[in-house]
Figure 1 (cartoon, helix red, strand yellow):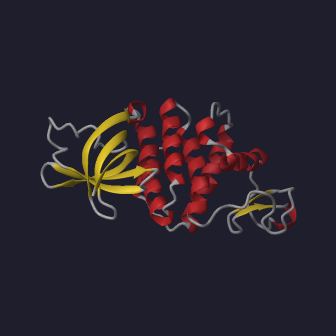
Figure 2 (cartoon, helix red, strand yellow; figure 1 turned 120 degrees about the vertical axis):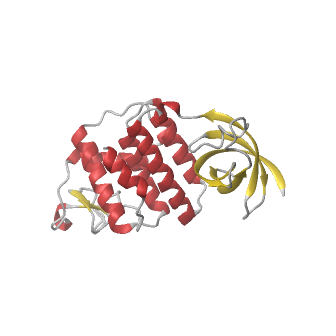
Length: 241
């Protein structure tokens, strides 16, 4: 057992007995940590706020690797109040958190922490939650082992591409597109842009609605076809939208 101080975000929590909670905190250094927050449900508990879902904080933890650790204290960095006061934004955060939990469980890659954190911070700043979520979804495909091929035609590698193929998993040229749906040229351009953009450096998102909607449609179909992830938060998000 050791005492660690670590930055992290509470992805989800479950009630444990009458007054405590078990948290799943995503961190960069230690990955996903299961933590007992003793007495966190008591009105006067100092752990009450930092143990809430989607709280970004510095946590002091009595750490036990591969076992349930114990939360000692926490100092909130961001409660994401702008997101939590908007139902649509909150629905995107809920979905992104559940997706992140599942992707991390699959790959255990610590890069996922920064992707998720930076995405949530951008949504909190007021950037379009659908666009930010789609950017994360595209990047997460690599960690699930089903990344899209976006550097040319997936069949012949020609750099001149016509559309993106659901069945082939990437861009295709006019010769190899077959019966694949024709997406807008700007949609093809932006999908590649989404993949390569550094989320933390986004300062402007001027994208036409039809392009945003086409990308979202494609990713929804791709995730449904290839990931095997059936998330309750996705269904809820669809109902909210």
